Length: 249
Image 1 (tube, rainbow, N blue to C red):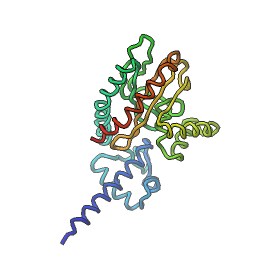
Image 2: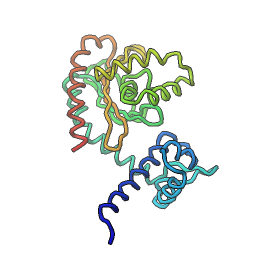
Image 3: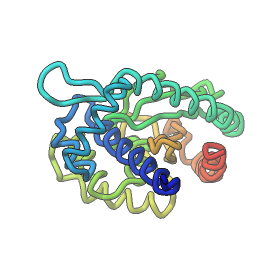
Image 4: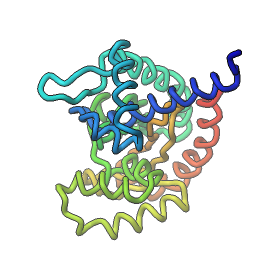
């Protein structure tokens, strides 16, 4: 007689291992060998080989054009796009409400491939305001949204992403680590003319149900940042737990 509970546990384990394989590939869009996937996912190579074969049948991963490795497939990208649009739809009312309250531009971005990509923006009502295009790519280490995401990570991963952005130059890591420690304590990241002269920003980070990191940030012309900072900080910190409840609902 089949053990129903045992079958359920086995099924859950297979899903968890498949998810570990997909996460290993997520941060390396150029693809990985089976051995590299096994090392990153912490799984035996034979297990990875079986899982990859099943994922290939569903077009969730595909073989690389050159070499013996695999990369994320078109079906997974389609699912990711659907999830992204859902995040935009869910967050848009909160971005709009914050813009109406503060009068400032509010952005939504996602961490992809070691960079922040803008998914949505609600422009501010001031004549002098900041504007970025949806799809625009921003760095991690000099922006409020990027720093907010880095602060949610374990230190080794945050350091690896920072060094990749700096082409391996570790000179700035101690100062950035001190910033990330403060952000973890305060829950709020700041950019004071660090990325673009004349523009400062505050931001918060959160994870969606798939574990992808997103950020909501409020960029402000630096000429009025000081007078707006307290109100923006209060609004962002109040939004974070509310947004978490909405995404989990």
